[in-house]
Amino acid sequence: MTDPYVSFNIKNKVGYIEFFHPNHNAMPSEVLQKLQHTIVDAETSDAKVLVLKSGGDRTFCAGASFNELIAINNEATGKTFFSGFANVINAMRKSSKLIIGRVQGKAVGGGVGLAAATDYCLATKYASIKLSELSIGIGPFVIEPAVTRKIGVSKMSQMTLNAEAFYTAEWAKTNGLFAEICETTEALDETVTLLAEKLADYNPEALQEMKKVIWKNTDDWDNLLTERAKISGKLVLSDFTKETLKRFK
Image 1 (cartoon, rainbow, N blue to C red):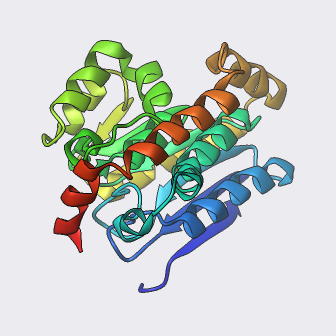
Image 2 (spheres, helix red, strand yellow; image 1 turned 120 degrees about the horizontal axis):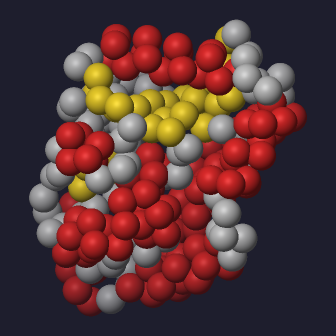
């Protein structure tokens, strides 16, 4: 696989949304837009439950595209760039369908945000997580509400301030991000499929009402995440961040 894509397939009433980028599943704006639209479009599909997954065997998602990050030269472009993950998280939040996360490998930055925005997340033992944004002069402002909602302010702060450290999948499970840990990708796929197909046979009205309960008190996220995107869009133009990003050219 060399070309980025977002795909959607339905099997046994389960809708599988898969994204891929050859650079460790880092997400440029174009892929994020396609992912957002796919989640929104799945609302009118025959799928009863959704699964969010990424292609490849290793990294689940390396976060935002650094190539695009480096190219930002004004606040408006910065806000648009950082709104990418905001739009995906809000699409997941507002979907009436339960979304199961399938995390086969490492998740960094925005990748942690995607995992946190699922309703039930399963992972392999290789799925360590990191919030690295502060180390390059910005912060996980857009994804913070989703992450904090799952693991709490204390653990989110710990990850954010210890920005160069990976936290193990077991740590993520202990602190509420992952519900289950599997030994292999094959075992993960079996567990995800079993759970998703079981849920797809439950009362759809009950599932929709449960989704509302899970996301209670998040109605302000459209505005909140947009404001957070503006903060990051401004910080990415700072001298500190520009100097730091030169290392990645």
